[in-house]
Image (tube, rainbow, N blue to C red; front, side):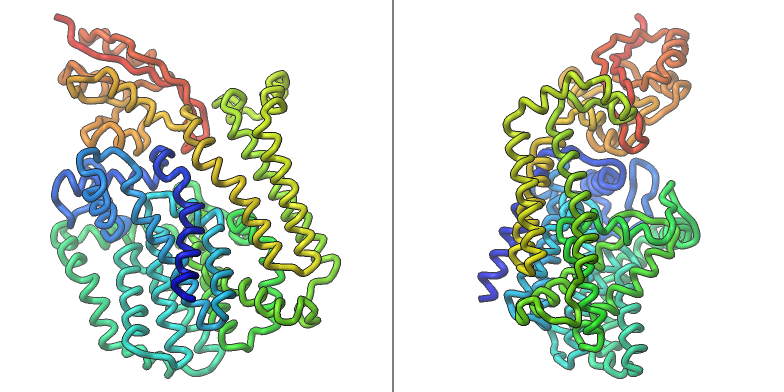
Length: 565
């Protein structure tokens, strides 16, 4: 039974996680930074230090970089600038997190309910996104689910060597992936349970002394090595320059008020956000149940912490999604037992209407996005920058209206929205879940596999690398002026020079022949400086693109630069 359920969940994950994994170019900025640092580990053979070009990258421990370096060495050792092998660890970690959620849910629920929890988690857009990116968040989730599995087993007095290994191994690996985040969520869970139960002796079942020894064996060898090699800079940078500033203020323009995650989850957990309110309402009514108490202790304290921390990014709350998925599955399982008629947590007509309206509007937003992404001729960098241009492109709407694939998929999408909501109103919750996830797949799978990769202008770094690969048969270096996204370095090599016009002209004068990419805003000054240094610039190609990291269109010109004879 369990083997069949695991296979089902793995196949379900692959349906959502494989599309786009190999075709979407490297994303700025975090994914490209992780991949580039991992690539430099392979290139240098130094698996202790973490560097992005010549600069230390001491924000996170080395676990993610090691796994990415191993993956690229196994799958693409001859071509290190392909992004997909760096994503393989995130893919496997996401699948492991889903399977771990199944086993965690199985402690409270029958296997069918545990499968529901796994399906809900695996189909959340935030989860799908992290499974596609070469970052640390899917890996963190896998380690945290393992640790929480051990914790709930100890809480329910089901301790054995596996419980101990899952808890302490998950905590130690979590530290190696993303520092104190996993232990912090675990500690908040333990604190909340202990306060509610007014008893903490149950934690002794986890054998803390031997557990801390395991964590030390996992973390200390590398931590001591990097501290020595960096002359103590790693902890100073990781904690003092990365973690603490995020706790005290909004870093990198990501400061947002409390309530941000509550609203965003309606989107990042869609389409299963249809079941969020009834699931939480059921949890509140059933809060004295041991399983519900544990899940709420997992979610509520950490959620409040993330809401109060000024720096906010969508993926910060991903470690709480397994618990939310299990809560919803718990509600669905109990609702099915009672045929949806229990009065203690049944929804009233107003709740059903509000949930339906909000959910339907979000669904229409996803539909509109999918239609626009499918229309490469209609969607341009200028339109992204200035949406008012849509009124000047009304004549091009015929392209959309005449596209039979777009029409059919849109009609099916709308039909599934209606079907899912009708099932929801009729309290056929499992049928509603399956219809809603089918609808989500209809939007997400084509978007990832075809729509986004076809928007070439959305990935200027990839475009520049293709131009350089086409013309640069002699392996001359690249100098980048004005456009300095991390993906440019990943695709064009660790030696790519990032410079302003003055520095760029000097580098080219000393290292010609070379190739140079120049942002249009810097072109006039650059041409003036290079003419004074006796350089001849042969224009190779001009690229119209969109820098989504900065939210603006960008014009890039690629030149072949050589010194006058």
